[in-house]
Length: 321
Image (tube, rainbow, N blue to C red; front, side, top):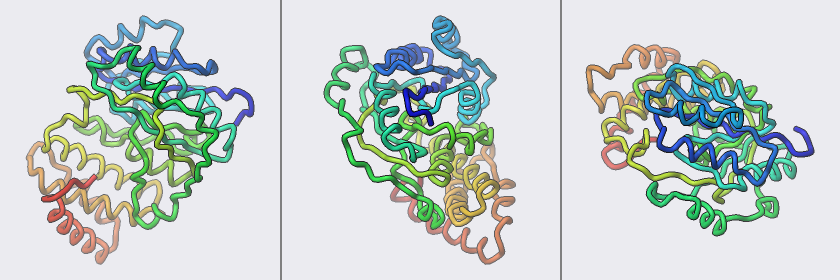
């Protein structure tokens, strides 16, 4: 990585968030750190998103494509980016003005890291305005380079089927370009939710292929609103989404990273549990589940289905993902 002013790419993925994407772009353009490029991928929106995005002209790199799901948007955004550091952003969220500056400074201090994860302040959509952003920044701004972070190597944990629960959602993920060149392209599986392959898969792969830092500090704003594609779903719809995410993550981890077979088995058992629980004719992944399970020896298949039964009991009391 360059030792002076590394280029930071803020890659925004958008689908039908016309009401929010303009604010996301503005927050990315108004960074205190000036060596920034903003890439905006519209994944086949049917609202007025493209008009909003187009209005920014050459201030941003705009990508318009047919709807292919989050993985397809990530792939397109990374392909168009040039940054040494890639920071992701969902179109309904915002970045604080010091995000790029803090991330770049942290990488210059720790050039050996491959990823950096932070948090975002949850703010109700009705309260988001420039005053709010200034208030959030004033309250939480700090010099992250002054903190002695522990560099996390999670590979042994993943090999033992432990998930990186410390890894946050899309808008809090930053990666070195060299790491993403190993991760991308992601498998482009849309599913009914558009999230079959999503940041869940990327977080696992990134923490498998590289080491990094996790901070609890806020460098963004998580918008709380009624149209969030995941958090506002009904219980059944969320279970269907989780089932897709678990299934295709298990399948492609097994295919691309066989060293994580134990984790794939765990995710597949959770998939089987949810798939049985949903019980909708229009939502049937039995063939893929069977194909994935038959990748394992007979005794390991028995283990998977036994764990699925245990997860079914657990599901009555808590969530699985």
